[in-house]
Length: 544
Ligand SMILES: CC(=O)N[C@H]1[C@@H](OP(=O)(O)O)O[C@H](CO)[C@@H](O)[C@@H]1O
Ligand SMILES: [Mg+2]
Image (cartoon, rainbow, N blue to C red):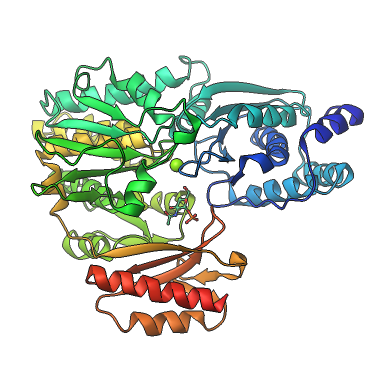
């Protein structure tokens, strides 16, 4: 470790007292001007994590996703591309909060942590880092790098501007192929485009069935998706990226992007309601790890195809392939959702498709951990954040099937398709670009229009409201966040309100990314959903 004098000087450059940090749903996320301290300490922590993981590369992403341009954040990605292990979240929080006291508190806590974890601070480690397009990114990167510098043998690979899922993917691949080709964003493009080429060749698909319009939220997804698709024969001339002004910081997520479209249930700025040629539209969020699709029906009405619709599309698709090759008994298929999933989607998956559904708390780390219990685990948050994960057993069963020379050609075709889909989908985390290609591939194979996809089930009208309260930490939940334990008595009042409506559901939880409490309500009519959301919000306000 650096000598005490240098360490103290660096500490004083970046760390300020007077703020309390918490590693939330997606890492640390606050207004950018209070982040320097936690960026510095996260630099230290990511280095320690890599040393602890025997030098394997740990990823770091500087982003605040769908939040406004003045926010930013940081999260650590473990070597396989998944979210940071939970026990380390509290080390990250405690180290940051020691630094908001003073240098002595920080160095005492750091020594204690290093000792408890048995870490040799001079051992080698590797960090792969990237950031989204926010203006504060370069400044926060400097604070991070200064933190990581206190450990002398940490090697940093700075990928510059990437989408969040690109960073997850490159972190995981970097650890898998130490001596292989350069693992950079061009490697990412090649991997996913070659899976796309294999699938379309296998299924005889020659062109996209409709024009594709992508709203990139004026974020980093814009230049990255253009760079990837522009030179490709399927996409060149058949797609258009709107809200691609990623170099104007104030426009990020403004009147556009997946969160805007899902929350307001309307078209983003820049996409017209006109419907003069077959098309499908989609919106990414600011760091392109979420996507929602939509189209306008013959009357010009906006129709949303959200994360729940993607989960059902993938689940149905994989179910039919598994049964076509008689693997439905040997490979398990399951869907993971959160309490925000529309009740109709859950009903459709369980009752119509007969596929088991599990509900977890909000945040992809929870969904991901549950999904890996299946051989094909489909997980999506309603807001469009999700992916499909395939087990080791899946790989083994499929490759065994492929090497069996007595298989029929249709069985071989289905097995190849399964295998190629596991390459087209970014299994490390939800990925707007990879999910987009996955959905387009499924729709093309099935010959489905967006209208046909939408008709599979009808959403229950729903409403999501943000309520500002003096202290959101008093809102404690149980049963995958569907019931409140505290404040006392509040759940009973919510239950009494819900009982006034048909097919209704409502729950309240504290946001992990914003200083607010979220109220969700759904019911059989739009008026009832709105009324229930508003009455539950009132009760929350009065209780706080
Ligand atoms: C209702 C909702 O959309 N919540 C979002 C939001 O979490 P909250 O904890 O609700 O603020 O941001 C998370 C990170 O992007 C995302 O995983 C999650 O789905
Ligand atoms: Mg995001």
